[in-house]
Image (cartoon, rainbow, N blue to C red):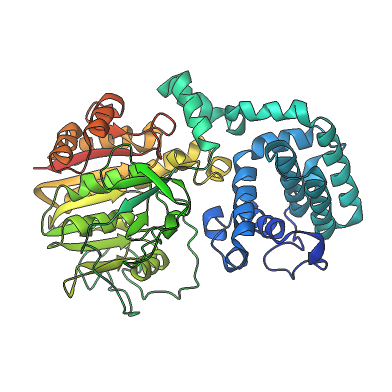
Length: 514
């Protein structure tokens, strides 16, 4: 469904609704977030942490989050049902009206505890504020028809694959088989597991306090002279990041020691890692000495941290969860955290502790990892490259609406450039972990194969040996180690699949160079 790209009174740049009492705050907030995402300029997780949403009560924030994530997860299904009940092309409709219709239909068909009159009346009011009385009448008519067919239409909830582009489901079916493809689809239609990392005592260090300018890549001799604008000052904190790579949960939940967890919080051990707990009930951010981070993301960080050395590069570091693991496991090393997005690096500086024993353990560099100087200086490099993010659709549901097959090729070209440059910056015999949060071969095995063919001396090492070492060090528990060996190995590579495994989908390869 492609609505008219016209300004809506409900857009974030417009004044608030004239009659806010007619619409619950959660629905107003959800409409604003969905409008921003629909225009292709925002990510839902960023918008759900915006001041507009943060100002809501906890109950309203929870409802707004459910509405946003639910509409985005089921948008293709919602649009098909809406289009079937329209008398003229949906392309003639405004953004705000389409958002109002999606919100109403989602509540009627997927949220059993929402009274139908609330779902309908407030959606009608949203449509009215977006485009006047005529569109309000149309919205009311469509939603009343949906309500009359509600019991029959709720069967749509049993077909999660219908909520994905057919080309994606088809390629997953061909690659992983029908059962695994269905598992991926089902996993993406539910809130993802809330995984937390239990931090080691004394490993947290102290936060970086300085608001100084980031070191430039030129000053640190990290970036080739070929790159335009080889370095720049740290932008203002208000500048937003529009990167489409959402590889891990925001690492923003580090709490000071002594913070009391909620009495209503309960957890269980992680599927693989001994440092992980899955939160079954309660607020993950209310548990002291922890950081929110998907378990597969943590596993990639552990694989990279295992390689050690005194000079470590995290080539695509933001949002910082894996950098934190590198620092935690390698307290004596100097770690360079590089990212093309200076605003995201500033967030890393502010949110996570980096200084150990009074020294600056992590240095931050804003720069393009594909331009790293080939000085063979790093003992370990982590290349968690920007990717399509198809392994994180439960967490980032809008990705499915923005992605096409041609984009995979464009991503792969960028990934090959980063991996090639990083290998040339690795000392002989050093170790490099290449990873993505993508399920697609074009971004994973095919990238590694292409780079191996073009970089002399590069080779892949069996990642199973690294898993064995993690077990010996007590970082993997025995059941998790066995499960990974049985279900997550593909030759020398590691691959987690959402739904097959209780985590995001990640790919990892371990490489070295002679």
